[in-house]
Amino acid sequence: MVVRRSESLLGRRYLLMNNHTEQIIPWQPSCDFCNEPAKYDARMLRGSWAYMCNAHFEEHGIKLGLGYGQRLIFQAPGKGEDTE
Ligand SMILES: [Zn+2]
Image (cartoon, rainbow, N blue to C red; front, side, top):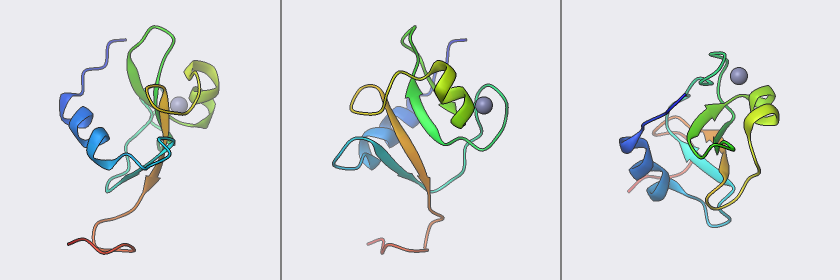
């Protein structure tokens, strides 16, 4: 499966946390494999990126970190942290 997500690539860079293992996102994506709520945005062994739930991250993910994957933290806009 080839996942193309150019908008998401921009969002990913902008929203990356300092440790490169977590990403705050204002929407809840679904797992690209099973439609469960995604917990990770991670690179697969073949090099493409996908949203994954816990089970599919175990199956397809490599690890967390810059260039490999981020844990997704869903945070609705306007709740929690201030937005300037
Ligand atoms: Zn899944």
